[in-house]
Amino acid sequence: MPINANLMQNAKIAAAHIVDKAGYWLAEWRIKISQWLESLDLTPVKMIEMGSYLGVGFFVGFLFKKYFRMFLIFSILLVGALWALAEFDLVIINWSNAQTIAHVTPQDTINSVISSYAQWIRQNVLIVVSGLIGFVVGHKVG
Image (cartoon, helix red, strand yellow):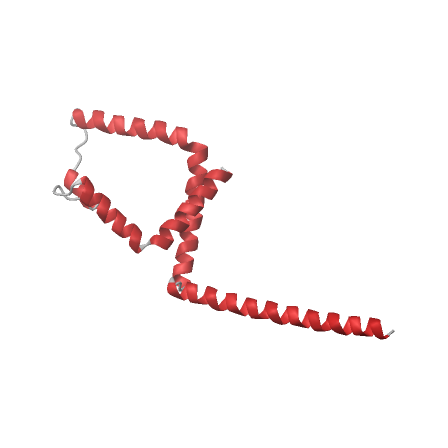
């Protein structure tokens, strides 16, 4: 009987040691994750915004996969109809307003437009990544 009691005592000590080690590692991971989240400056508002972009990205990716062909055909037809109506002077396109809406000036080059969009992406990288992840998941599901 003393061997069994000693074995049980050693098993209890080993289990307590494993639980202590697991608690230590979990605490370390919690601290590291919280420091990482603080470095990302994740506030509840930003997390809601990221979730919204994730949902919108999913919705757009899903619809893109399902209805891409129809969207492409209607877009080509719309551009062709607008071009034909503009050629016959039935519709006048105010290009200065279109440039204002697109935040493009006549002096902008392709490089300056790309660099301004790249700067916006750098400033909003978490939102862009969450939207992209949502789009990819929605595209895979659709």
